[in-house]
Image 1 (tube, one colour):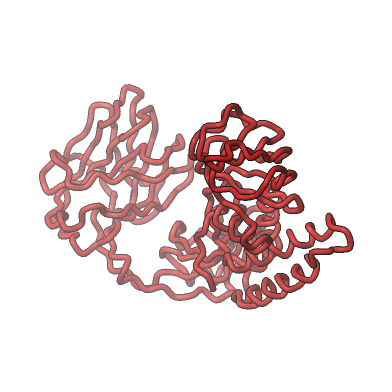
Image 2 (cartoon, helix red, strand yellow):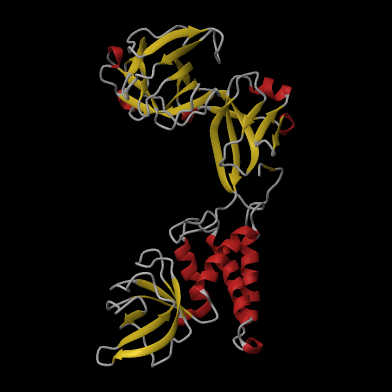
Length: 427
């Protein structure tokens, strides 16, 4: 299959070449227009009126980007220099500048319809083709049976659980942090509200807190140079935006000069969330003796619990599939549900979801395809040819025949898509 990643502009221009061959024109203006109605270009050929009725489309890179108009008059503007002037209606938003890129399409092929045909091609395989995705966003705890499906998934075909972890405990959080405590932090060990062990570390943070305030805990020296991530559980009474909190790691006491400052992802309010923070400088983390929790941004009164801080090497972790009899999807609630046997099998372990997302619509010229462009181009070409055959008497250009040929190509490419077997749709 083709490598996905061409932009909508690339795909549309490929469709234009399929439809019109050498007659399809992609060019740029060579003279500043007198107004917003005139395109002047020395690269064009032909006499007066030759492009009358043709469509003009401005791609993403130009002034008037995304605008479409139609030529009502073609003039040999300056015979000596060879300028052709295209007068258009409706006018563009801005006076046509020098070097404005544009595309010229025959009257029967509206470029705006080409953009729509691209999305129609994508829609035609939605639910039958998915862009592969995986996630380590969820963690089983041994008793929960319902987990919110990450928004990146429209289909899940495997749930795996981590059966071997190359990890090391950094801090159990069974006791209150006491190495360095900011005046705005009140820290206790909470034996009633925790995820693992005997307690979690509870931080009651006053409204007088400022960005950069932190508290720390001393740990025995750890060499984390072979690790890739730090994992922990977080709970907050007020939702945290991405980068509101940061984990500090230092080889000096009280996080005096952190060698790692790793920001947290967003954390929903009143929900235990398992977070994985990628180490930025593991080669420097050879003697970590202090961990800190910092209010990095949007500082405000909050109560935050932290539990079970681990350092892991993701490259050496091992995952085993959870049998499909042990899990299912609740599409209405957007949840993964484990049976009691599934809950027991997963135990306390990181979950790995494997599945996919529906191919994305291309709403802008710069957006790139997540679907095989060979299929998108062929299917959209067939659609455009069918539309073009409706506007020519008795299909004198043979567009219907060409449409059938491009449809065969699209169907042949579509058959190369991976067959979906035993997948479970999340949306």
